[in-house]
Image (tube, rainbow, N blue to C red):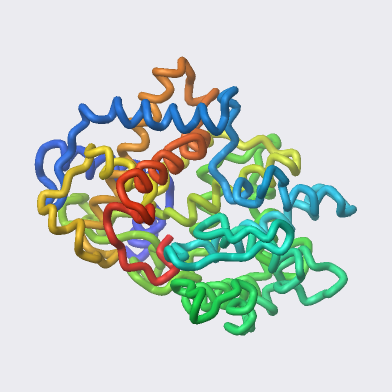
Length: 412
């Protein structure tokens, strides 16, 4: 019985479970069975046009990279990380990949909503950068400066023991936080990195295969699973969820296994212990997308990239609310702030994942592309995230999302 329960729990730690349960939520919504939203698919064509418009503007040749943390390290046309990495002499390709895994994991964990007020002043350009891009450049500066390394001569690494003892003051200072420049959820982010350090230090058999324990050791764990030099993208997510899952503040558990970004919704039926559970794994999938390129650079072929799903976050979700594909049953809900585990937010996020799959089909049809030539990861980048941000700024001067979610800096 315990073994069966554990299998059921692990089944939720997969991209397949996210996609299946999101599709179920959409099906229930289209039948009029959701408490908070109605759905108007007739407006999807307009969303596809909006996404194509911003995509063509950003990528006129339609050669679109993946939606990944690496895009945020490019500032004023300069790829900051590539410049640093290319100027470094690595002993082999795996050493660079470990460093890139270190950087991606730490940077993504630091990337929750920053709040509208926070800015990071870039030393090189003097530019003040907010939101996700600001958090990215700040985290890259921390990494490049050796904040997470125990060896001053080797800054490009994140050592488990350094992360485990990271002082709040270090992040406060590195993020340039002050009363005049507040950053949401700083305590939560610091705690997350400490938890990461502790987990990695205790998991040398996963994270210390070819080096002292570091998050980048996950590269070796994934590489060891390659078949004929190929790694399937959903296997990257499975490794992220199963190996890094315990760092998240405990929310739901099943058979003692933390389920991470997984929430309850009574409309989702199943004939086992996973009934009413809706996995979304937003930050873990964003991280998984960000680990594809380091694996490719290290010589691996990454397959089934569309096996991952769209991301259940507020730019993609806002895209469908602002374009009125999703309509609130109670318009007053647009004014209230909602807890991340509220039924409204769970519905919104799951519907977002399912609608992104539909939207991807529509965008490809209009552009004459296939999932192979235009993967979902590129549509998100081109794409849905930018279109969600664009309509948010068109509708509201501060570009805030159409729905307010109370975040603690760790919702992934």
